Length: 267
Image 1 (cartoon, rainbow, N blue to C red):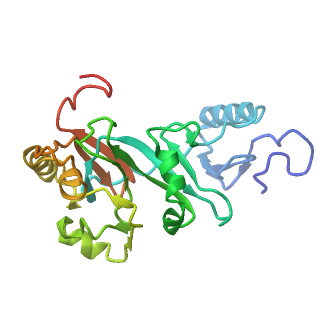
Image 2: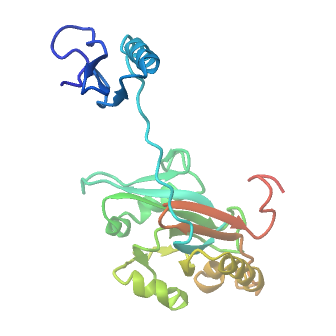
Image 3: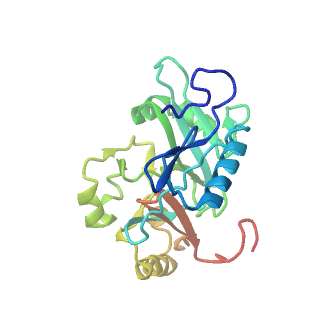
């Protein structure tokens, strides 16, 4: 029997009804029925089911929404350093003749409506950035005059997707397990970098705490290992915290070394 709304007989659905299945059961049939069997002696229950089911056919059904699968917590994670700059993105179009676009977290940027000079930097490095390939490439724009500053004399763009890109200037400090698992990564254009990977393995709170202690003690791996600092200072550049990417959940989490319990923007 058809489970459609009207079965080709008009705008209204056919009513839900019963059909004798055998001496002991009735089968329920009609729109949105699964052929359930109801004991013949349970007449009161059968009447209630038919009445409610027919009432429901008088209205358009609501849209069903499937509850998402819950990923397992004890699965691999990637811990990277959280760099204290400003969120940025480079958009490489499919058309090789079309210009590259730059963006911040909240808006597209142009050299005339910029964010710490990122759009100007993208325009200046267009040929190199096209090597990233068509798509949207997210990262952190950081350094001189931005947030923590890191005593930088310039600014830098560090890509977030460390499973796709590698930077030979940082590669020796990445965990061996990570380098083995993601051995097909592509070298970034020389104008870019990649966020430092601190840990790769199953979810482990102790490893997260260890990464935070290491950054707190030794400072920012990104700033202290990779980039040029003000030659007048030998101060170790402090780190902001870590970002944890849970692979199975496809979800990012962050922990800051200081004021982690406070909402962003408060101290």
